[in-house]
Image (cartoon, rainbow, N blue to C red; front, side, top):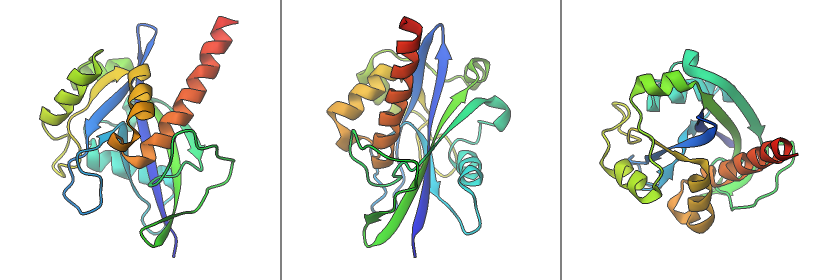
Length: 195
């Protein structure tokens, strides 16, 4: 029986720059990538759930201080592998079943843009230095009672992209493909502004 996963990359635009949330995965469940970097939140679809319903539920479980009213925009990327992916993977418009530990998993990815005022209200820090941001991810308090993620810090999108390209093994696997899609989207926007 196929299992389906959803991942959501969180970002915000501030003073003309784009920033991505970074947290440390802290779950103690075996095989759940403890100690890797998360750029948002993720989880499996429960029976009868749509990917969007899973996104809302997982946001409530892993980052409960974020409400739907804090979201400016959601960009839907159907077909992003949620558990196994490689940098630069090219995907079509279909969900792609993939094999992981003996069971099929197909992913659904989202880019979630938060409102700048909401981020300020949460008290989330912005950090331009990647190493300092990663250190904060290790020492920040948990983002929820589930202790799955550390409280996030926002880093420049370029630093999230660089970390994913140079050290994909340090990033939760489903975010590798999602960062690739994120980079492609914002490269297109940058080109349009340039022309």
